[in-house]
Image 1 (cartoon, rainbow, N blue to C red):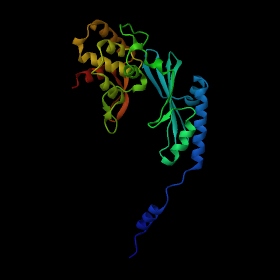
Image 2: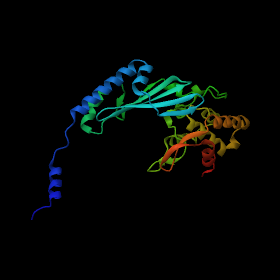
Image 3: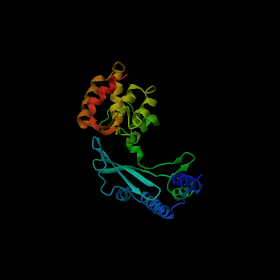
Image 4: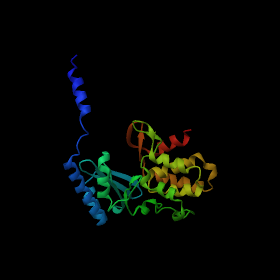
Length: 265
């Protein structure tokens, strides 16, 4: 019996060895890894010039803060970076390296990254420059809680690195947003003083989630007039916040979203 042509082709495909590694792509990746390693060992301005290159992907964080995203692409990988500015002065940046999906290449790429990035059994870690500045409260903070003594998890949550999108679920799979997921891990162990501190986070999503917590638990707070005044300042400073509604990401009215989520069960 003669097999159909498509069946024969399928059997032939199964008999072929795995696709060969593309040496041109590997050379491209070696080049960008070498370049990235050089710029992060140079100056923040050098890293900014290398990654941003007129990027229009700008996020307004309010209170003089903003961020810009940039990336360089090679063959098997891309390397991303986010730069943070206060009053147009570069304050901090993060570089996100990437391993190729091909298992056969990971050990090779680990050796290429090793001089500049930390690698362990969990994978490869981002490179951070002055990330501590992102975890400090806004200069407007006038509260009793000393931010430097806040638990690491709270300081990390206050940073834009915890996710800029305010909301609950979104995306094609309707998965929980990164910022919301981080807050849920904190909410049962935070004090009212810590919540007030978080309302002054550089990250606008973290500010709004802390305000949402206050609206849900007003009776716990003794400084309500101070908080109400700050809330209005927050909404005036950044009327729209990044969020995901269903599968659509964009900028949405911050006051409306906080009212919605503070009443949600």
